[in-house]
Structures are given as structure tokens and as C-alpha cells.
Length: 408
Image (cartoon, rainbow, N blue to C red):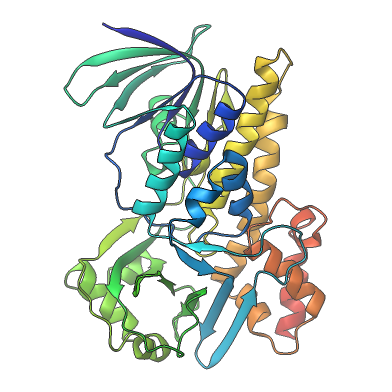
């Protein structure tokens, strides 16, 4: 069997893997990226958060992303019945980027992966990791190439950025059940034909079902007159509908007058897809000579579009820890990587749990909101879930108190 050597092996060329590769190449590290799929390929997670821009910039991809022609985004809008509210992410508690993009992931992920290759990473498509061994001094993986050849790669460090593929959690028995209920999603892309001036295309629209507070819809406009449209609900709710995925999606949308009215002229020209049981967790985010990035480690829920931001943050933390370790420092991966990563994830989690219980919806739809509190919430919705100067990041339980005040 052919054996190769590299300093850093990254499994997966999606956002986490590509940004990690860019950051590591800036350190001068030798980087090999193995991607099972052939890019471009479809993916959801299309509405970026402004915090993401800092990591794109740090990895060296900012010009590539800006010039790609994606839909400009400056906030998020929420609709529940006749109640509507919108957050402008430029009006936030935390400093930093206040704008970003809404992206078709096939194109966006290709832009980032191309950036990694231009930075000097060896990016290989249709190379599948089928086995891994981290027991020895040097971890190694077995890989199947597109022509069927199996070869081995020895690496000083492994980063799993395989997303929902969750390669290392599966192969190393690291998976553990998520605390979130099992939910699913139907989604597609449509030619939306929304008349100009009737919809703010610079914001994602999150709509709530009029009878079910835990059923919500995303409408993510793109720059080409199309949008991503999906519904998220518990699987027992979704299973009540019959027909194809697209027929089910359209039937549920028909129950929401504001959303169905917005999409009344849409051309539903693409079959819908289904994703269920996407929430995931692991026993550990890092081990001897390996770490899990983004969705490979933990995925909460798509409601606040936090997935890509968490992926980028994990790549940034891991790259910084690797840099210190390769310079001879002792790195505590639990304290230096897992704990700080989970601080932000836990802040997002508090808001996700509150959303589905209805409390956070009461907060955002409450009239006469405090300007300062609104800026703090806007910062978290913009991705700044690691800014511990924000009271709702440092002490997420404060959200419960806010819910109670808004309920009264």
C-alpha cells in the first residue's frame, strides 16, 4: 500500500476545512485536504452570519468571497401572524462585521476550497477516508481514491471537518445522543418571483406557523432571483403530510398566509429534499493528535444560521492551538479548544431552546423593546456568541429572566 506523509490532514473541504486550511497555510504548515464529494455540490446552511466574515478574512479568502456576487445580507426578519420584527446586524452590541452574504453553498464552498488550493493546500476531491488509527505516535488514515486505489496517509495532526458525514465520530465511536428532540426539514430552491419592493432581500426571513410555535420556515433570497425555502418541525408533525417532499413542503407553507402570499408567484422548479435527525453531539471534541471541527463535532439547529459560524470558529481555535503545539508549547485541547468553543455553542443553545419553547419569540415580537437589550440580542443573532462582554453570552440564563418580563 502506498504511504504518504503530511503535517496536517483535514477530512472535508467544506467551510470548516477550507478556513482551517487557509489559516494553517499562513503558519507555513503542510496541509492535505481529502473530500469525499466532487465540488460543486449542494448543501444547506446558506445564510451566513456577519461574525463569519472575520474568519473568511483571516484565512485570506475575503476578496474571493466579495467578488463572487453573493446576495448582500445585513440582518434577519421574523414573522408570526401579523407580528413582524427585523434586526439590522449593523446595530449590535459587539464590534466587528455587521454585514455578510446569503449564498448558494455549492458556489460558496467551491470559492473557499479554491482559496485553500491557491494558498498551497493539496485539495483532493472524491478521496474517501474509510479507516483511521490514532493509537500510535502518528495518526494515520486509509483512503480510497477515485480509481479505487487504497492508500495510507500519516499525519502529525488530524482535523475532521466532514460535517454531517462525521467521519471520526463514527470511526472512533465518539458519537453521543443530542439533547434536542428529533426534528426534520423539507427544503428546496425556487424561482421566487417576489415583486420588487415587497420583500427585503438583504435579510433572511424566518416565519412561524400560526398554530404551532415550534414549526418555522426559512426564506433565504439569493442574488439571482431565486431563494432557498424550507420548513423545520418535529418529525411527527412532518409525517402527517403525504406526497413528495415538495408537495409536503408546499402544503405546510399553504397554512401560513403571510408566507404563501409572499411566494404566490413562485416557480417551484426543483425537487425538495428531506433531512431528519440532524442534531448531533460527541463525547469529546478533541483527542490525541486530532480534533473535530464544526458539524462533525456538534450541530444544534438551523434556526439562527449558526452552523457555518461555529464551523469557522472551531477552525480558528484549532489552527491557533496547532500553531502553539507545533512551536513546542504544551496545549490543553480541552481548555484551549473545547471549552472556549462550547461557550459560544452554549449561548446559541440557550436561544435555540427558547425559540422552540416560544419564550424568545415573545421577546423579539414584544413592542417597545429596550434599545440596549435589542443590540445585545442582535449581536448574538449576528454570530457574536463568544463576546463575553455581552451579558446574554456570559450568562445565557439571563434570557429566562427576559422571557418572563416580556411574558408579563
